Length: 482
Image (cartoon, rainbow, N blue to C red):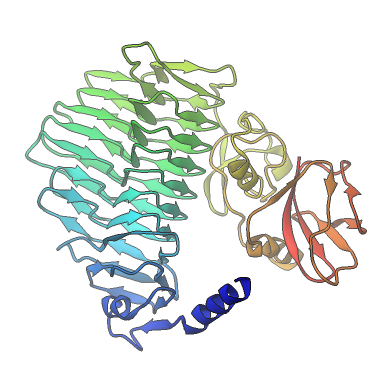
């Protein structure tokens, strides 16, 4: 049975095709229509004025050759950019490396002017920007039914506008109705506005149901509401009936502005078991006749259940920080001391990275869950890219910046690891690698810190953190020492 399965897998790999656009197919739609499961549609740099309908085939990968900065699918203001609703797609279906721009929906029902998807496709390294819905609806940038893997995307300047007033505008950036996973995304200047009255919920993300995971994202300057009447909640994130994990994100400059405005960072409704830990909320604001809670808000239910939030730093939020929230003892209220680095403006000041002071958010978080914690320890809040190796820092963690020489070589091993990090407590066991006589442990600056012989090796003398384990046979994996 095993031999037959291997033969089938080998045959499938051998028959997978790469379909190039425009050299082999003139349009992206033509490339998708020609693709079978396992095929890759590879698109050359350029702007493609198309409105794509994904075929009813799971396992197609739509990728760009030059990345999102150089490759755009433009809806030209006359419809949705990409529709992926023929199936509940799995993670084998991928849409990566494109700018999805200028989608526009004029009439209700309005779902996702930039993208509408179902199932659990992987959506990564895209720029979902300048998409607009001119009606009541859900998801100005993207509408997801299911559990997408949504990472390393920019979602910016997407909007839901209804000049007639009334109605609802949910998820100006992204609306997700299931257990999606969101990390390393930037949600910037998305907004819902227009008309008197109505409901404005979820400027960055609206989470509806399921058990979504949102970690290590930036929510910046998203805006919900209008100057005349209505209710605006959750300019960063609105949680509706979901048990959400919202951890290690940074919320800055988000605004709810209307008659009743609450929870400019995060607003939680109808489920008080969500985990809101290790986040930074800085200078978010609620404005209007009855503003409240620039950071985190929730309305307790009739049974008295209350949202609990802990290990968050709230600073400079207006008119106050919390409403309807039980604040845990690990919470802070202090200037996070943001500093600019090679990838952005939200690193944390740290003496070891060359700044004069340590941010109060350094080592001030708490362990969340193993899959999240291990990734955070291979990312950084430091301008010199040193890993987060002690207690988790609060807030967003950057990926490493491009480096050269020994550091680049060592860190490239991290990117090639398959199956994720391995956690050891006190000892490291050699990986199963035929022909490996020994292995070496490297720190993330490329320095060899230990040579390991066969069998268990005691390494408790090393500082906790991420290391690269390389064998003499060439295998490598990430090691997280606790």
